[in-house]
Image (cartoon, rainbow, N blue to C red; front, side, top):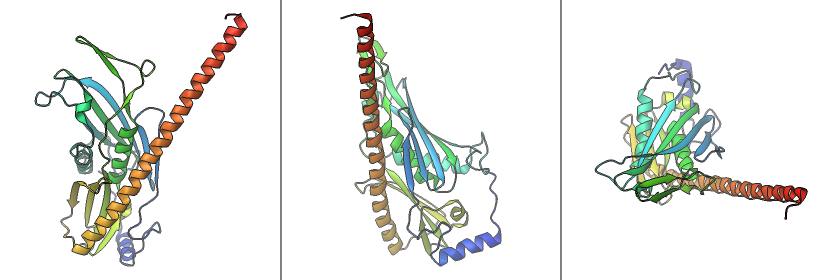
Length: 301
């Protein structure tokens, strides 16, 4: 990463503002930036805007041979891309320390937490299973990439539909969306990350740091939790010791934030599914009306 360092004046200004419980964008200490969730025209395409941070997640699938030690389970693969389009600090084609850390944390959050039923991805035991691939693309970087990436990934997985399959003897047939309705993934729960940044050796705690606040922080704590208050993963950096009061405050914020984000994801997904069904019904109705008009014009019964 070609990171441009902050000047001493900028650093002092940011730290002084944090001491006075003020932030550059006018938020309070424990306030989250506004979140916007939208879906593309394809299944499994999701856009998340967290303030000025913008991320796109795209889910795809393919039939592969399963692992020998897990013949009845499908696979889930995550890939994050940090392009120079999102920030001049990122370099194309190079794996930075940040990229490796984000990939590992996303895998811990979504794959290791067993939020998806991988056994439901089995087609033929020991021969064919579905591999689900989640590609996360950073479109604009303004801090807190992990939170935005976790929301985009789980929302895209909820929106995704895999093709239906049929088995006759040893032959496996994959049906198109026109032949059969695609099938949603079996999702047990929805882990979502919430990040806390620490300043001046843990004296001050902020939620959802922006990019400039991340440059002057001393440590970062990322907690993945679902709406059932189950902690799915914890990642800490900076070696900051948490006080008991800070841990309690962070836990309360985490519970409230995860519940709100889960409602937002499910609400956006329901609206999108409802609109898709309405478009399909209207499309079928238009085709029927058009066919009736054609038959009337040709005099066919």
